Amino acid sequence: EDILLSLNALEQISARNCLLGEITELHGEGRTVWVKLKVAEDLWIVRVTQAAVNDLALVAGKKVWLTIKASTIHITDFD
Image (cartoon, rainbow, N blue to C red; front, side, top):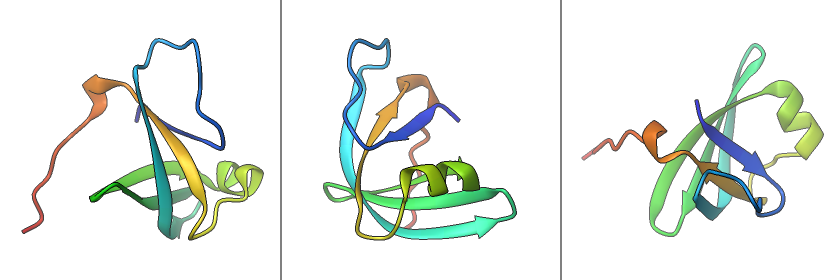
């Protein structure tokens, strides 16, 4: 997927969608971790590696930046 998580806002990149969010949950599946984030009133789920979780020290409550390529967004209504 083309959603990146970073501890700081990225600059001078082609992706124009940078949002600040807060991690609410992390769920691991082997080397893959699903990170749930709250951005404003929206819920985002991002897949990263366990190595990324370790390197960035990702935990619930931590604020991170999402950098998104617009072509990768899929809107889902869970209601």
